[in-house]
Image (cartoon, rainbow, N blue to C red; front, side, top):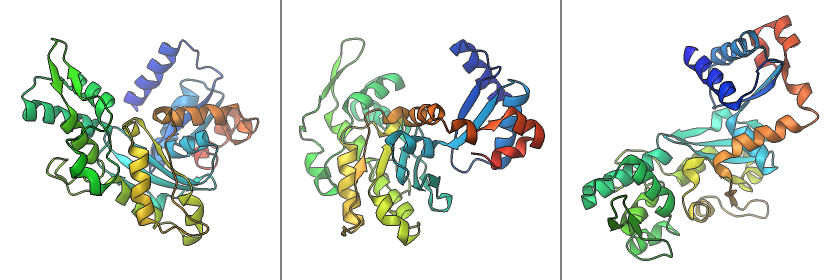
Length: 297
């Protein structure tokens, strides 16, 4: 809790706001322990003297930002990627699936490729810049090898601070493939499934009656999802895995601001007139104690 206290204190200080009598929306990862939620509430109400608290899973907040209440949120984080089915606003935790790679894992891969493959003394920050500018996803698994070394309309050169210009095309294609085939020799060399298989497993772990609605909104979010053409590739892969019917056709969404969708969803939620009715108030906390966070949120 000491580390969490430090984060909250630093946040309020940097924002230049007084926490007294503020209403706070907190984003939480799926599967957070109940005791941690209670300790967080205790810290916020007793030390920072807030007036109200609403804790919500980050996937649900991101879904709010799309204007939808049902779908599968595919959150590509720094070092993990999760598929979280959400139906009528509620995450289906039993169907949530996670794999241990994300955006920063791709950064590490690009770093290794440029250092070992081309003998370049790049820093991790330079490799991250190269990833953000150049990594792309090929249209399908069938075209991976054919397009790996071909021009697909993206920049293929990168200039280091010392003025050295290097070609990064092949490395960027390989890095993009790693999100879909992470066990490839040029990928992570780890026995984990790619994003399409992850979503497929999560989708089919939900009740059959929910699936037509979920398939309509397979939503990409998180900073690691900002790879070029990732939405097109995921949609191709998912349509091959989820048979189209009169009610069901896989549709992948990738909002431009998806790196900050949980933040935007929290802003939307807190601006609603009904927000005061769902948040835990200071009066609620004083009457019931920290366990109140399990009754509201």
